[in-house]
Length: 462
Image (cartoon, rainbow, N blue to C red; front, side, top):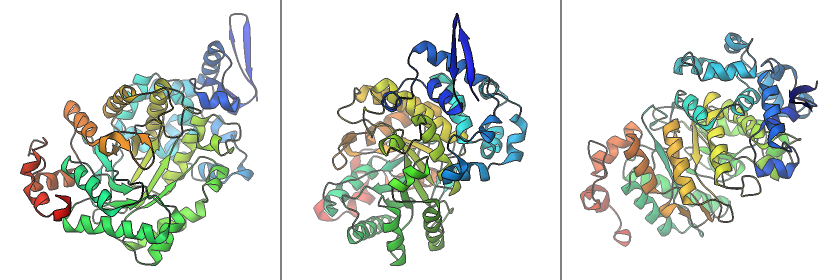
C-alpha cells in the first residue's frame, strides 16, 4: 500500500514499504547508485515522517522480498518470536524510537526484546535516530559470547589481531602476531585473511596459529578467514579449527554470490560445534558483513543498502556467533562516499546488530580512493568505544599490506582503552599481566618487561 506525507503544498507518495525505507535513509552513494535514494532532502524528511507512522506489525505482513523467493525472508518470518515482540507490538516505528531513547529501554529489557525484533524494524527505526541516539541505545545493549574467553562484557573492549601477509609468509605473520600480542591485542581472535583459499595453505596457517596459542597458553581463539567450504574440508581432516568464518549478506541472491546457503552454514555450524574446542563456551561462528555487498552483487531487490545489511544480521543470529563485524568502509566510495557516510553507516550497523542480539564489532576502515582519512577513523573509533562496540581490528600501523586498505592499529586500541577506561577480555587481561605485558592496572609496560613472552621467541624473531 502507498504511504504519504505532506510538507507545505507538496504531498510525497511512496509506493510501498521498500520504497519508503529507501527514501528515508540518510544519504549515501550506494543508494544513489542503485537509484533508490530520495531525490531531495525534503523528500527524505517526508519519508522519515511517513515511516514514523508505520505500525511495526506492517513489517510482519509486508515482506520486502517475497517469502517464496528468498530464504532470508523465510528465516526472518519463520523464526520471529511473537512472545518477545508482544510488549511493543502496538508501537509504530516512531513510538519505538521514542521508547528506545527513554529510560524504560534498559539492558535487561533490550536483551529480552531482541528475538522479537526483525531486521527491517531495527533498520527502520535507525533511520529516525541521530548519531548520538544510535550510540546511546547501543551502549545499553550488552551481548556476551564465549569460546576460550569472555567477550562483550560492559567496560571491556576486545581486538582482532590481524597479522595478514601478502604471500602468507610464516615469519612475516609471526612477527606481526608477536607485535600485536606485545601491545595487548588479540583477545577477540587472532585472525588471518589468507592470500589464497588453497586448503593446504590454509591448513598451514591454522597449525601455525594453534602452535603459537598453545606454546604461550594464550586464552583466545584463532581463525583463518577462508571460505566455509574450505573450512569444512579441513574439519574433516582434523585440522585445528576454532571458529568457522564466512562473509554473509541479507538476501538469498547475495549469499548465492558468496557461494553459500543457510543449509551450508548449518552444516558448518554443526561440524565446528562437534569439535568441542571451546573451553568456556560454544559460540563457534565468525561472520563479516558490510553495506553495499548486495548492491555490488546485483542482489538487492531494490532495497536500500542499510536495510539489506540489517537483514544479514538475521542470518548471523541464527548461528549464535562468537563474533560479527561490519567491514564498514571496505567496499569503497561507490557505496559509502566519504568519512561522514562511513561514520553514519558504522553507527547504524553497530546499533542494528546489538539491538538484534549480536556481538557486534566494527572494522573501522576505508579504502585509499574514498574521501576519508585517518582523522575520520579516529572520530569513528572513539564514537564506537562510547557506544560499547564489542571489538575492533588490530593491524600493524593500521595498514593492511595484504588487503590494501586502512583500518585501526594496535596503538589505536590502546588509546581507546586508555581514554574510556576499557579493559581487554578478563581472561586475556590476566594472561597479559602474567606475561608482564600489562600492569595490574591495565597499563602497557615497556617491552623489556615482557620477559616471559620475549624469552620464548625463536631467535629469528627477537
